[in-house]
Image (cartoon, rainbow, N blue to C red; front, side, top):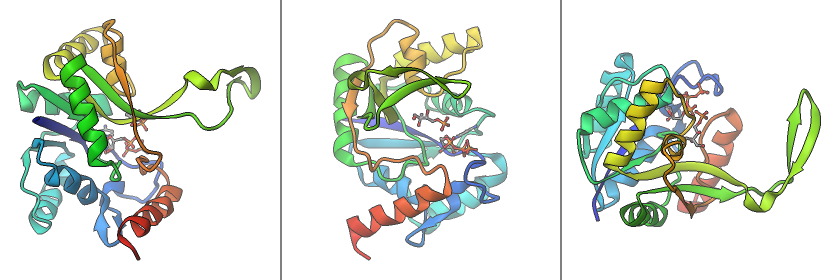
Length: 228
Ligand SMILES: Nc1ccn([C@@H]2O[C@H](COP(=O)(O)OP(=O)(O)OP(=O)(O)O)[C@@H](O)[C@H]2O)c(=O)n1
Ligand SMILES: C[C@](O)(CO)[C@H](O)COP(=O)(O)O
C-alpha cells in the first residue's frame, strides 16, 4: 500500500502561548515537528510528505529537515489563515494520487498500525478517520446551564490522521471552497457530500499538543516509550 501525507504545520500556537510556532518546541530535545515527521519518514507505505508552512518559517524548517535527515518531504507550500486552507494548498501541490492522509503536525504520537488501518479502510471504503471513544459524561451546555446529558455510547473524540481517496477529498474541498464552508477537520467536508466516513479506533496517546499541559503529557509518553 502507498499513500501521501499532508501535514499542516502553518499554525501560530496561540493556545500554547510560547511566542513562536509550538511545533518548534522540543520534547526530549527534539522539535515536535520532527517527532511527527519521523513517523512518516520511517513508514514504508508513505511515499511523500507535503508540509504546509509559513513563508517566514520555511528556511528554518528546511534546516531542521537537513539536520534530522528527513528525506521524504516533496513540497512545502505556503499555509493559509485557517487549517483547512493549509491542507488545500498541499492538495494542490500533490495534484493527483490514490490515498491521501491528513495529519496534524502537532500530533507526534501517532502509531504506525493506526495509520495502516486508516489507509486500508480508505482504500476499501473511501474515507476513514482516527478517534477515541468519549470517556467522560457528556453534557450540552448553553450560557453555563446544562441543557441535556448526551448519550456517550455514540460519541467519539476525533483526531487525525484522516484518510481519503484523493479525488473524494479534492472534490469535497473544492465544493466547500465554492460554498465558503469552513470545517474543523477534513471529514466534515466529506460528510457534507453525503459520503460515509468510517471510524478507526486510535489511542488516547495521540494527543494534539495544544496547551502547556500537553507538553508534560508528551514528555511522559516519550519516557514510557523510549525510557528516560
Ligand atoms: N492556519 C493554520 C492553522 C493550523 N495549522 C496546523 O494545523 C494543526 C492543528 O492546528 P492547531 O493545533 O489549532 O495549531 P495552531 O493553529 O498552531 O494552534 P492555535 O489554534 O492554538 O493557534 C497544527 O499542526 C497547525 O500547525 C496550519 O497548518 N494552518
Ligand atoms: C483536525 C482536528 O485535529 C480533529 O480533532 C482538530 O479539529 C483540529 O482543530 P483545532 O480547532 O485546530 O484544534
